[in-house]
Amino acid sequence: MTLILSKSDVMKLLDMKDCIGAVEKAFSEMSNGTAILPLRTVIKPEGGLSLYMPAYLRQSGALACKVVTVYKDNPSKFGLPTTIGKVLLQSPETGDVTCIMDGGFLTAVRTGAASGVATRYLARNEKNMTAGVFGAGVQAKMQLWAMNEVRDLKRAFVYDISSEAMEKFISEMTVKLKMEVRKAASPEEILDCDIICTATSSAVPLFDGSKLREGTHINGIGSHTPNARELDSETIKRSLLVGDSLEACINEAGDIMIPLSENDITKEHFYAELGDIVSGKKPGRTNERQITLFKSNGLAIQDAATAQIVYLKAVETGIGTRVEI
Ligand SMILES: NC(=O)c1ccc[n+]([C@@H]2O[C@H](COP(=O)([O-])OP(=O)(O)OC[C@H]3O[C@@H](n4cnc5c(N)ncnc54)[C@H](O)[C@@H]3O)[C@@H](O)[C@H]2O)c1
Image (cartoon, rainbow, N blue to C red; front, side, top):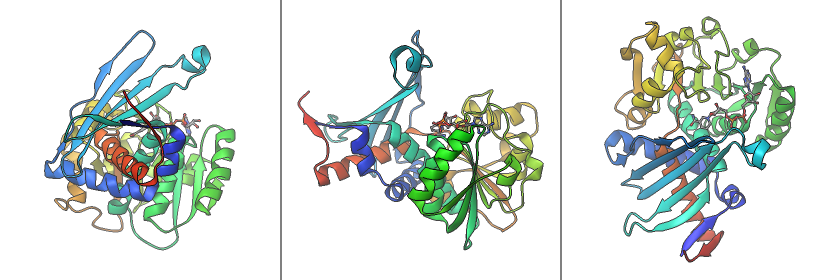
């Protein structure tokens, strides 16, 4: 029997704290050589993009493949979201598909969780810190949730070009995190925060990196194509650069590829993969003045680790529908 989990099932089962733990272990497996992470396969049918993201975590026993599609005309033509994702979880013992679950909420939480792990190892750790988020969409909310799990936040600021999105973000997150969340009057106001997340759909830099304060930690998660970037070259140059994967950063991320192609940085500027910091091969932040940056592209190991904890909790609590396929 295969277990089917809808979006609302996954929302009941998945918690940020558990997800940060699972994703941290997945990055450690990546560094220790027990993760198998083939390149994502992309097919371009007429209507859009279809991406296949497989991964296996040997120690955790998580074997999964996420299928994500990006079809721009879906909302207007079919009343469907632009991005749709489903995760297929298999038993590493038999190979059989044990569970098929919705991947939308899962993707947002696992993306937040990777930033949570990075923040834990790279941000300063003080009482009453402030967090600033560029973007007020789905991902941005999960970023703030994750930062709040790993640091003592007293206040958060949000900046988005849409005031409606900001209002929604503030009303939802104030209740969810029981924290003061304010609208930033300008992008510069976000730069006064201790921890910054960029989670927008912008293809151009969101702020002037020369204005970043010493000691800031940044999680850059939004842009992920060679020609789009949320961070300018000055930000990259001034930062201790950590990425989820070196390969993804230099082949997919405009944030890194553009300064590389313009000779503002060399490949040696890339300090470490997050897994190497989690596993202790390299230290994270070493002083209070460093500007640290985590560039996230999104890896299938995050999906596999997260899908597995969702499945195990579903079995434990009896949530979901079993079908014979
Ligand atoms: N790194 C990862 O693993 C990962 C995973 C999922 C999504 N993403 C990326 O994260 C980004 C955000 O995704 P989402 O689902 O939250 O999208 P969304 O459409 O829900 O939200 C994006 C927000 O960015 C805002 N925005 C655009 N330009 C801006 C600017 N210049 N300044 C301030 N705000 C601006 C928009 O108004 C919107 O509210 C996308 O680029 C997506 O591809 C990354």
